[in-house]
Image (cartoon, rainbow, N blue to C red; front, top):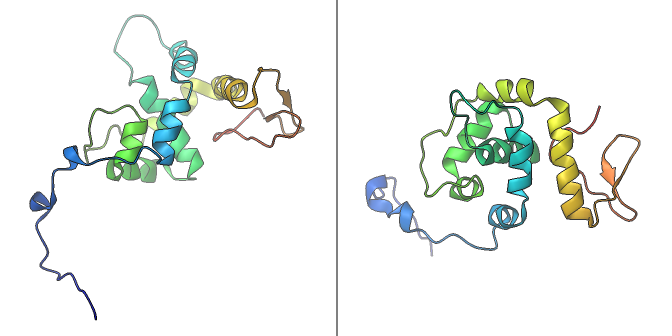
Length: 161
C-alpha cells in the first residue's frame, strides 16, 4: 500500500496555526536555552556598548545566533535563514512566537565579530566553562580551550588565539 500526498496539498494558510504548535521540551535548543547563563553573557556583551544612543539588538539574539552559527558550522546567510525556518531556534533566542521574517541582516555578523573581538568570546567561554565544569577553576589546553581533568568540553565559538 502506498500513501501519497498530492502536489495539490493544502495551502500554507490552511496548514495550521504555528503559534499554537506545541514545542518538545526535550529539544536540544529548548534544553540549552534553559541551562545557558544568559544573564552573565549579556553583561559581558553589554560592556561593549555605551549607556546612551541607539538601542542595540537584544544580547540573547546576538549571543544565541553566534552559538547557532558556530555549533552548526553555518555561513552568516545560512544562519539567518535557518533561524527564520526553525521555531526551536527562535525560542532559544528568546522570541515570544514564531516568525518567518529575518531577525537581522546577515551582514551584522561582521559588525559583531569586529565589535566584540576575541576577549568577549573568551569571556563567554569562561562563563560556560564555569557552568559546565563546576567550580570555575578550569585550566587551559595547549590550544587555549578551557578544560578540566577528565573533560573535553569545547565552547561553540573560537577560543583564545
